[in-house]
Length: 309
DNA sequence: AAACTGCTCAACCGCAACCCC
DNA sequence: TGGGGTTGCGGTTGAGCAGTT
Image 1 (cartoon, rainbow, N blue to C red):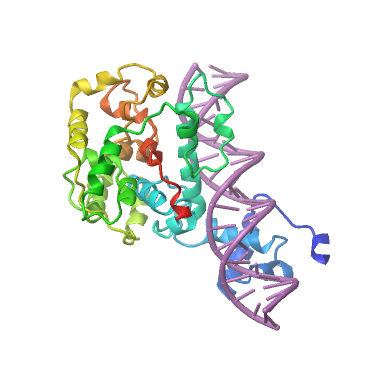
Image 2: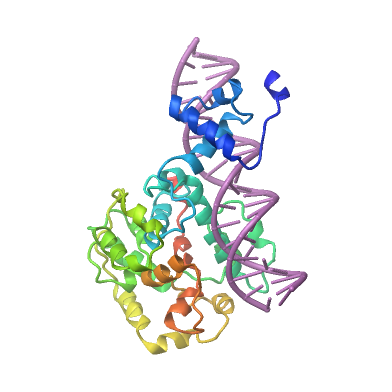
């Protein structure tokens, strides 16, 4: 109880504090956090010191870099696989912390929740969601239907013995894969894709390339689409495809029973995220996708969170 | 140009697991 | 083996920034 009398400093860290913390880690390694305070080095809790180190001071962190499209993909897929196990997910993203992943995911959730808000829904609905890892908007928007192709894929996949686990596969499949169904094994092409668009990358991509992504826990097999899904994919190229949505309000459309909200394409995300700006063109296919929440599909699975498995 | 809105990021809190005595 | 201390994790919050109106 003595310790409580000592003032515990909170709030933003100063450079001097960082320096002290770094020195401590250099001497003793990233441990004994509580001893930093007991030795009087810093008036911070061990917890706070650890957090500061892990989130900001640790070497090889990609501070200030937006998530690349590959990273986004990984997060989406790993979240579907592991649930809100941010620390675990972060281990697959070199240079990213669990906090980064958490923040990334939660901002996507917020964005999506806001986009899906209909006039009839309670304005506070998006704020009342206690668990961002779940699918709040599905509860709030009962008329939002699970996309047909997803359901059909479920059936389709369940009949294919090559898939490890039906429910898991459904979660792992992202639309970019469907848009580029001919991509062979995704994981093996990850870097190729990355380098193909290296000129659009933020500088931090260079450092990213120094840290090859470790293998995903479960490699994605080449995607096989159900006939319905393939038809849907084919329609993405159809100019009339966009007539389905036209200039209608997306949220209203969803409220009437969603057609099939579509995740931005891989390359759309690429150009959008890396430059950090939205496209101006009002209704190009790209901007069209841009107006959709990028994670709309990520939450369609009716299954409980994988963390409950 | 100012006000407003949304987004990102850093940090805190509570809880649970782990470790050590 | 139990208790206290430490560490790790996930959820949440708030400040500051950027974009939009």
